[in-house]
Length: 262
Image (cartoon, rainbow, N blue to C red; front, side, top):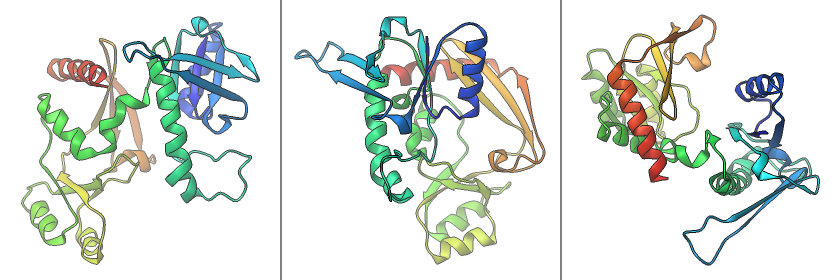
């Protein structure tokens, strides 16, 4: 049995579920917005902190045999839906209160289950703060382009102008945001007042995304004209590629150390 946790309509998760079902694997969809309605879980701690908590998951009142689950795939929606039973709740209330509480519970559940979990939320904690994430990458031996965090237009403009190829601007948090080049319009927005942002040296060329699963490395080259291809798919191509050996090795080492640290 495979668990698909979070958003069953996410394309990556839906594709994985389709492949699993084609191969005869039972797929159990645990939708985040149906937690407490269609399914529920219970964690019971022991007196000894060295023992993991007992886990109980029930769907429709029937307990799931966890020994029959081979693994879970987590695909959370950036804008989670509120439960259908809550009328009149706003998106701001979901973001500020409901989603963090609900996801904290999901995180504890996924840390306690006795089987492998892909995209385990607790393993991405450092990505919630890009400065922390980039410092950890640099400490692990990666070459991280120069960056600062600021909302001061004078300092940000001075830093951007000191870089021969210019700079990009992105959110300092882990929220999905549109990465843009530093321009006069950006400077005007900073001058009008804004939260701190990451200003970082622009690196031309194709993007390469590297995913690590255990000791396996999967790399994809993204060819696009846009600075942030995630928001402009008018002319984009994905190609398999091989990451340089030193990058692949560093990615495995970082992945292993981050997993042990959580």
